[in-house]
Amino acid sequence: MKHYIFLLLLIVTASTFGQHTNNALIPVERHSFDSSILQEERSFQVYLPPSYFNSDQGNFPVIYLMDGDYNFYHDSGLIEFLSSVADKIPEMIVVGISDKGSTKYREYCRPNSGGSEGGSANKFMSFLEKELKPLVNKKYRTSSYDILVGHSMGGLFVANYYIKKPTVFDSFIAIDPSLWWNDYALTKTADTVFKDKEALSSNLFLSLANSPGMGVRGFVGVLDKYFPYDSRWSFTYYKNENHGSVHMTALKEALFQIFKDWEVDRDTFYSFSSSQDLIDYYKKLNTEFTTQFSLPAYNFGNMMNYYYRNNLKADITILESEITSHFPNSLDIFYSVLGGYQLEDKKYNEAEVTFRKSLEKHPNSFRAYDGLSKIYTARKKIKEAEEAIRRAIVLANKAKVRQWQLNELQSNLDMILQFSEK
Image (cartoon, rainbow, N blue to C red; front, side, top):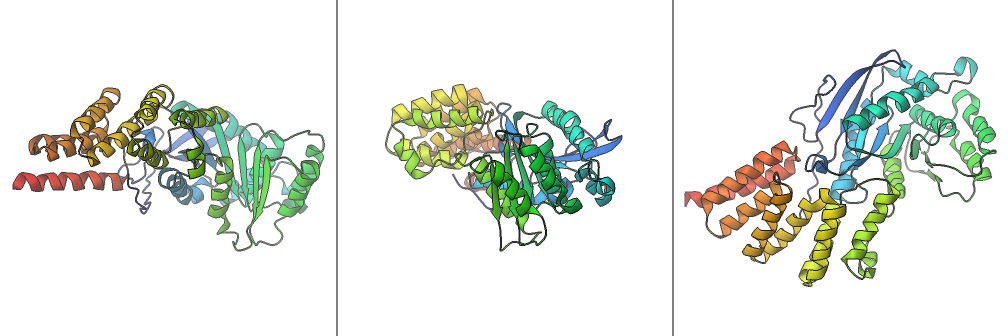
């Protein structure tokens, strides 16, 4: 299975609630609604991962981005790369929270306490908890695992949220947060709140660039005083990153920590006694994150290669049965990978059975039709091959696949058309 590194051109146009952009290489939706809490119209953007449209099963953790119009494009591109190309983290939905200009944005980020320096953070917390999150959960196939990300003033908001309402999100990522605000008032608040806590109830990831005076180390000192051995919080200093460049590095590293067990390395894989151990490993992750994940396609393909090349038919049977029961959104990938190896070995009858099994479960599988087109081509049934690949292209467009996948299908069609001209 090939993966291509491609330019993530996120072409977005404004739309009303319930509509999505057209012709975007990454499907992006932008919605607006009237907030009764904020007493104004609010907008947000949504990134949906590749497998979201390939199946109507499975759900996804959600990342909520403060300053969403500013951070949305590079963050969603990074998350797609890490999840769908590198297989370092699972696929996720990304919600970019739009602001109403920098003045109002800062007001909503600043904690309520602090006299003339105080803002309206409590109101914006209520907006997220009572309006935006329920709306996103109703509209999309979300899991119950949520992550809040903020940078600079947004990081101040995230740290304050963690102190005030630590259970609203499962993980909080505060990137180079502006904890200098109001003479380091939030650090003083943290010292008061944390001294009465026995343990932390959610994850907090703090980072600091080579930005003097941010006040982060004082906040870290409070955490270290009360929770020196608690693994739910971490701090990373990036001495070679500035305030602007630290964002993507810190976000990537925080996500690696949250999903540290996602990638099955070679040693772990070879320690499994059978494919049942592999499935049980990912079932455990599903339970930990209360999410019905898709299996990581690229790494899973490599593992399937091991079972197939070593003729471990019992393991392949276990995978088919367990994926059908516990990872139904990954069944199309399973058949696609297996059928691909059978095609490579010119076992056309076996490959056809595999692809038709896929179509029984997923009648709109563009991968299965693509596989059948190659079987027909090998059998010199060019008319049937052309019909199958054209069907694959239609279905792929409906599934909003990425452009590189469409390019692969089109290349297959071009090759078939060359055969038909001979």
